[in-house]
Image 1 (cartoon, rainbow, N blue to C red):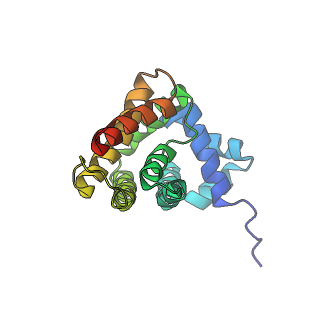
Image 2 (cartoon, one colour):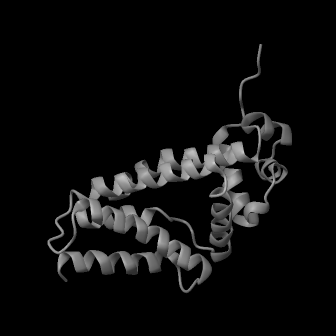
Length: 189
């Protein structure tokens, strides 16, 4: 009879995200195992390789992002809800070095066709969720909901990348300022 699985994938993937934040693309399965407090064999058996681990981490992020954004948007005012959903994307990202390490890992991920395809799926899910939320909002001076979703999704990526390489102030503040500037213009303020 097989032993029950006591070490969850979530625990291992959380450890992987933390290690990537500290070490960037130079992280190893050994680092992840140490952070999770498990043997290297546990991580290797579960994910097969570093690429398998990164694929699982990207799938987990994709599965969670729409849910997190919708939960953040569950406020009375649709514009405030859209704003909250956008700001939730990088919730908790406060350390520029950690952001730089994640950005460096993204660069490496883009080289791998499987990881690049999974990242594309993550961006599709994000844009579809932003589109869903944008359709609830009256933006009299804004573009079509489809273009608004594309612009806002691009804004998330651009601000986070810029802040990662030129960290001035907090990412949450910078993102809020830029999201507010766009939404205020589209509302006619």
